[in-house]
Image (cartoon, rainbow, N blue to C red):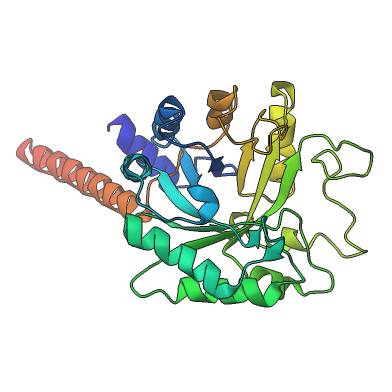
Length: 308
């Protein structure tokens, strides 16, 4: 029996363990032409573990086809476990207002027009203000899900586990996955927004996100030194995050995601290699079963020939 078949059989019989955190959700906010080595490194990692990379052209307001992005998206899509998600902004920083649904829909369609409807696995909806704009995000989610002949995944980023005064059902109706922590590793002030202070007090409510599958949640942590990598990973896992990104990039210039972390390879090594699909397992088990049956048949025939 080959090693590959033995592995498949072990997975089928539950002999292999799988961590709760399964995916790196990477804000890849660097142009492929500015740092092609980082994109190449990301693509190599996507042949080892699940990588959901957020493509951020023009802060989500796409107005032209960029061949460098097209090439990077195609290469990521050609990996074993890589997926690209299109970045969508929902707040106009210049006008200091939330963008309308029609403006957001225009950006969604611009990505689809310039790069093809099947180039992206889904959309990353940033700057979510829940509960104030709940209706807006529900409408955006429903719009994406109604796009014909698509199976887009919607990742939303409120950055905090908002719920009060909403129900958990309301919050979860805005995305397939929510980033319920995005911030620095250490809060600048005691009690401030930092992963060391997370989870924040939730007005007496229980940690409602613990009752959902971990695949519904993600944590993004920046300004994290290398010696906090393992402890941050463990904490995120204990708080039911299924996707994670930890980086030593800082927010000094407003973009902690302009490069991969210096310890990227260590972070990748902490993620599990995806298990084979059920179809592959079933096929392998069928092959194994046929091989065992054939072996038994040969033994019976040999016994009969020998007069047994």
